[in-house]
Length: 274
Length: 281
Image (cartoon, rainbow over all chains, first blue to last red; front, side):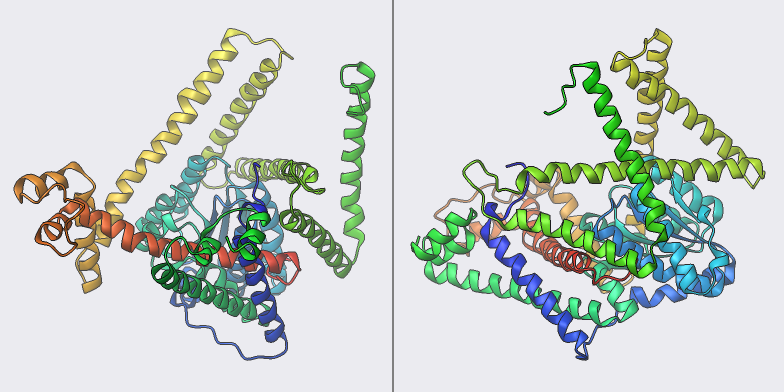
């Protein structure tokens, strides 16, 4: 098989089903009116401060989704950028959204136009502010670095999937003195952002951003579901560690937890005791 | 295959089918525009749900002996649809790029000279690339100057520029590391000390310092007790400490982040599939 399938590892398939159930149940709970708490994320509180600084300086804000291809990461990035654009529209601050993926570019144009419409300033939308630079990694990097240098941007928001080009963006922004807030799912790039940016959103905080900014019940419920899923993982790790220490590696329960394989392997392990 | 592509008639028929789909696809766009926003949203929600249902069902349904279920043959064509949409969007991206730089030149906006350079580079590269692709398919002749021109532009210019940009990262790492390792707090001090140990431990200098200068044991017998002097001294080698830091401290944290990202991505995918995500839709 050249693609992933539940039959490759039944355990992962069950985990996916459990996480999905936890998320959906909590969305339903939030919709029913349950009060859900979300902790403070300093990097997201600083978004308004960065926009305010750009407005005072009269310099543009850049938004960079990195090399993100169109998918869940891109949707999340554009949701964050849409929120930022709504804030920008209130203060008539110039903005540039720079993409390396043509599909993301097409959707970004719509999202940014919507943001200006929702903010009540459709007149401020300029399609030239959403730019597709290049789909080649370092051509895109040089394009972004050049724009940051030429326009002396005052704030730079980097949310999405980044690779080796992350440090080029972050250091160039640092050189021009921009306030920089980055959030990425690429954990290998986190150290670079931590070193070069003012605030860094790490790991799953990236997916919590839209819930934090909008406080929508659906998103808050989903976030609580994610936390329950994480708790499940922690419990699995603790139970697995204790069980493998006390029962030994050859016990059927340990094999059940650690055995990759299809549905046949699952039924055999559960009902065949092996 | 129902259409025989070996014959002229077959090729013409296939071309007409492709053309028909193009007309249908582009005809659908104005038709969709006439729908009220709520109708458009409902249509998008239905298409998204059906597409998600297809992939989810294919993923969970058991496979037969040939590693397939009844939905598996549809996976590759469905993924090709995404490629087609991506290709159409690439045209849109290129159009946006050219429109912006043409405006810069026509209106003589600031630094419009860069736009001229970009358009010239774009036209030259596109001409040589398309010519090269057509020549590779034996559709046009490939004179020597075209071959050399393409090599000059692609191998000797574009690839080298990519490499130059990549190498600039080395300098940026240096300046970023300089800021990160400045001892301003207890956390920064721990970070700097840890970084020094890891950097020394993974290069030959670390092994030299531990083995020759400090004279720490280079191996330990398998029977040795973990808390024996021999084992403790062996564990104090820089290479061992660096390896412990990377594998016992760094790797679990990275995995924890990966778990979080995976769960977050899955939750987002579920919200998109069921059209519960209203961020940009």
